[in-house]
Structures are given as C-alpha cells and as structure tokens.
Length: 369
Image (tube, rainbow, N blue to C red; front, side, top):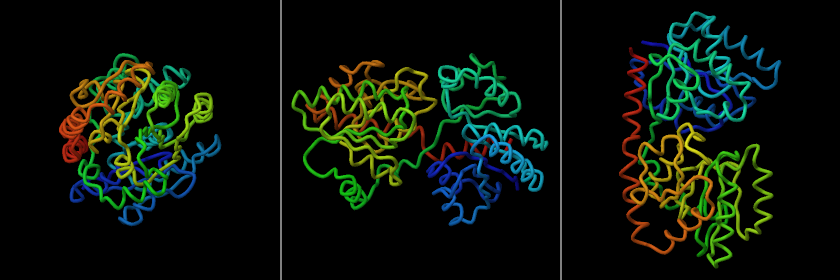
C-alpha cells in the first residue's frame, strides 16, 4: 500500500478533498494530511469524522513559515510517505522543498494558478520555477496552466500531467428543495426579483469592475434584480463596495462564505463569471459548478472554459472586459425562456467530461505509476 501525504494550505472547506478522501482506493493508498492553517477548518472537521490522520501547523508570518517548514520536514522524516502531493501556494513552497530534502521519491504539486504571479507578483515567479524544478510531477488542471508551465516557465514537459478537476455532478444537480429554501431565507432572496449570482473571490482579475456597471445598467432599464456575490473576500473587496455605492445598486448581497455551495447555485436565476482575460483563471471550477446545477450562464472564456464552452450552446459567451455585452446577454436570457431551458440542458450535458470517477481514475494512475 502506498502512503500518500497531502499538504494543503489556507483551505477551510473543500469538496474536492472530501471527494478524494471518500473515493480514492483505500486498499491501494493510505492518506494522511498536513494542514497549513492558523486554526480549525471544515476540512479538518471532515478528516476527524472520517478518521483520516492529519496534523495542523500554523504557517502565518515569516517566523511561522520557518517553523512550519521544520515541522513538515520532521513529519515527513518520521512517516516516510511514498508520495507527497501539495496544494496551494504555501503548501507547495514548504511541502516540495521539505520533501526534496527528506528524500521523498515522488514529489507532486497541483498548479492552481496560471500566470497570476507573472502579472501581479513577478518577483515570486522564481519560486514557482524552483518548485517546478524540485517536483517530480506537476498536475496541470487545464491546457491554460500547461501552457504557462511549459512556455512561460520552461518546466520539463515530461513532468506535467494534465488532470482536470473532477466533480460530484449529482451533488450539484440533485439538491433538496429544503436546502435551497433555507438559503433563500438565510440570505433574504425570497420574492419575485431576478437573482443574478456570482461566486468568486474578490480579485481584480475576476471582472467585478464590469459586472457591477452591467447590473446597474439593467436596473436603470427597469429590470428588478438582486446581485448576489458569494465568497466575497479578498483584496478587491473595498473597491467592489465602492463600485456598488458609485453605481447605486439597489439590491446586493455580499456573502463572505457559504458552506452549502451546491444549494446556493440553485438560488440563482442567472449565473455570471467574467474574468478579464483567458489566463486569469487556472481552471475556473465555478464554470463547471454553475452548468452542473443547470443555471443559465453568462461567461467570458478563461482557464478551462475554452476547452468546453461554446457560445449559445451551453452558455452565453461575451468578450472580456465588456460591461455592455454582459448586460445585453443577461437581458437576452431574461427575454428568452427557450434559450434558458436549452442552455440549462446542454450545460448539464457538457460537464459530464468532469465526472468524479474519471478524475479519481486519473489520480490513481498518477500515484500508481
């Protein structure tokens, strides 16, 4: 049996890790986790419930990073996993370097960003390249990420395995009506106003500076709608609040975090995700989740989206950074019930390529070779 140590940083709840714990072949692989979190998390609670061994280490601050590195290194020396698999920024920096110096033979990290550091933190690209060098395998979650790794960072192509995220699609499609009603009550979304949803961390690259004027334009045209922004946390939050005030949006919900994300999608009549360019997203899980839930959607293409989303087939696709196009697409959906129905049906069909079983098989193949 192969011992696998997952090292994960700054994650509260993650359905993806819950699915891996539940579905990875326990006869072939034994999992343990190192959580680089400052405090308890929903993921930690899940690991306790499922009796998966883990430790939590605080990696906040410069001294915290050094202390965390030593603790991770020591933990790896004691437990000697066959494979270390790292997720997120701190985890890959600490985990890959510590496992390299611990002489762990398989050092894997999943790349969850595309060219974010190249654009916003160019000084950090050297650390990305170092991690690429020290890793034995790199999981690219989309063609977009693979291009950044090979073309921009010159990572060795033989290290790279393209494994898109997998999803429990039924979990997004078969949601108990009571869960939906509970969220509508919780976030005051009951009534006859059209609910337009966004689920995205507050970053400039997510395109809020175009979404908010688009919604304002609709409201000025007489459309009664509520804008819901979930996962409303991050460095762009204050700017988004200023935009909301400047455009005098009359009905907005900012939701910092919602655990029942599957039910939240079903509170929306229309779903938006409009990153500012094709490399803003490494993957864009919300594309898959929104379509899996059957919500008529307006998208710009980024991350994995160009690989499976087609305009007027499974979503409406608009140009990047175009508030008028976003507004017009929403209006088109509001006026065309048949289009909404077709996009919902085709959206559910198109995301079958991201079925959880396929993802788990690819992951087991990576670990097994």
